[in-house]
Length: 620
Image 1 (cartoon, helix red, strand yellow):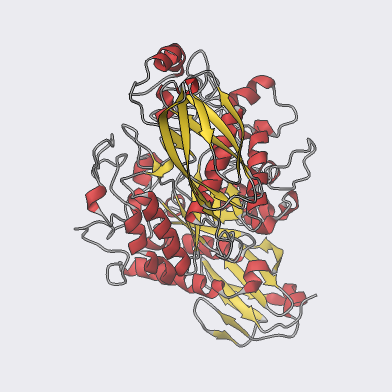
Image 2: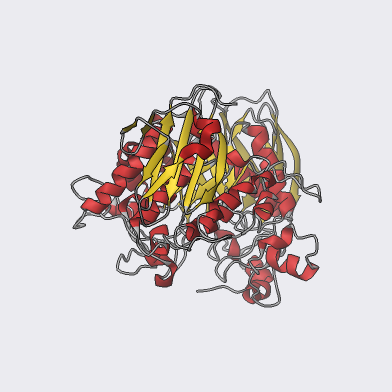
């Protein structure tokens, strides 16, 4: 069933009055910690007519600041102060009528373990691997279909649930470690108890619960520990802009302004640039921010102070509970930007080394850069968002190797996007990618020319920023949006019992897949221990005749990258690059492992990349 705004408006008051008599007491966050920089905690309490009760809390170091009721009598908001004197432990929260306890919740305060080396933040020393859990591997078939979950598994339906889960990810961490990735961005794992299209995870129905078809909260923490034990990092996918229409609160909203309502269903314009546009009309600005992403995705009103606190606390809760290293924020410009800045500031206060990357899907570096922390925006806005996705570079990569070379076409696109890095406060902390779960697989955009895919991967793994690879790239997956998002996000062969092919193993890959896997693995494993690629300066030269050359260098090391997009052999005269090469004539090409004994002229194979380590000790 699809709910519309009209239904919500018409039914709000009646739904409030007929809430179930024996409704379970719900308190969120379900527990908390001592020792945060911000000691305030706001508890959302939900139960039938709970506002008619008085609240009693007595625990050393916990002070009740206020208890607030709202439009809906089934909610209370308890504002607490967790003082430095508070110790870990449990205490009852009692709800009373006429001195009698009618409901009780045992609340727990945990002590933050500050000795752990978690919350490290991902950075340019990492390579992020994006995977969709429902399509990666099914490690536990017993959780495929569960009572109370609306959508059963149907692997035949590309838009249905296929059964991938947390255990499937855990079982293949060795595969990912061997490949050489160092951070996992996993598409949302929170409960999406929707009637259909629930597999992708972007319609949250419970912000404090892992979807049982993926596993439990404890399974997620165990996954995080397993990832950390392998020296890798975990990035959680979050959504503040919208929830799912079957979220538990949608039948009993705390207040009529909890979501952004319209007289009739109104879709967002998807024009994120209106937020930073100095000439944007009020109509366009409001439609973008308050319009719904989809009919089954109610648009949340982050200007509701209770909802704002709820979302901020939820991200802190998961970061602490699962020892996260980073967050990927979906549709980052779509919520109210002042709230997003407050969230970013809170996260920075609590986790100074943490990193967050926002999905700011716009075509120009200047509009994307508006959202990065400390951007010199004329309106004074500071997002406190450390990282953004490099969507302009994604656009450039799509055309760089397929367009004919011209004054402003072809491989020059890569050069031109990088030349605008002055727009970003910190271009080394932006995420580069060739594709993701929302767009055509890169190989599809290149007419299945694997040579183009190799060039694109070598580029994002050696240019500035934090590279991200979409799962299945190493297996030569090639699907597109024209087949539907469900088909785009295909299953990994070998992730399901009975699969005829197992692409997780050397023997299970085709020769072409094995060649691509080895190619990526070689670069990834080399990249891990090369600070010159992580933080070295970038110097590039205007592409000529379809050949693009750039250098990464620091005080001790220099790497030369040469991309030949031509479908023919090229002999590159390197005299242009004498300021870097000087008299040095020896280098090692890392993809093949071969030594190059003279660098005056470099022979380039058709549609290929050479990554050359040069014995160059000092660059000025």
